[in-house]
Length: 344
Image (cartoon, rainbow, N blue to C red):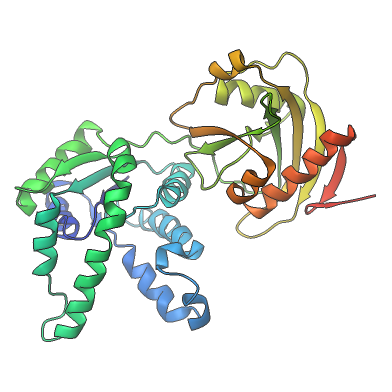
């Protein structure tokens, strides 16, 4: 298990984490910031200049998961992780990958009034005898108060909140330990096992009366996606698409969807690639759209979007697949792609 102590600078994450170690038998401190420090020393300066924060590095987010899994082979757990995580898509990526490893997460938000946060930051001194360095750290911390305030809505809806405004570090740790014992802050993300070989996946495109396509926002991975999923052994791909639409959205398709695109996705470590099929699920009436359901453990949101809107929401590989699927729908003829490029 991982006890993820979230919150902005000044909330008391690190001091509380050390106290939590005394209250949870077998627990170990796990600080992903050390991974960021390591990447800063190993990556070329040109790559580091391309990001504002090491959390923006896909390698850091993957290392957080891989290192946690490795540590849990050495210690009984839980891992106590004091780490600010304000971008919901990064939370989805990390917590979703942990769920795929069958590592449960208790997400606890340490919150405090802004005046208290500012006071704590003003007195922060990371390096004694280095006034310039400490001033730079304080500026960095203050700059994150705005993004923290913007993230509070999703944080408070996702995590168990402990208000540290009037608490000592020990009292905060006691609240955290009690939350862990009672199961508070559990993240019920769907546990999709990481592939170990090429996979076959079936997606279904659904449209509204304006010919906008439906995209869904999974909780277990970053970015928007089409309704659908991995085809199970012995299952027909079209049937898999119908099943996934029913499971994810509560929509029962009346007939077998028509194939639009078959795309071979090249392996790109850590992914294995495989065949990706997109089917035409047809147009949903307004009444059926009103029936759309969202399983909280799997999908956070859905949205009908135009082709141009989809380009800014989908990763390039999915966007490319979608645009060719839309062309195939217009022509009434399926397309065979390899790595997103039509053949024949």
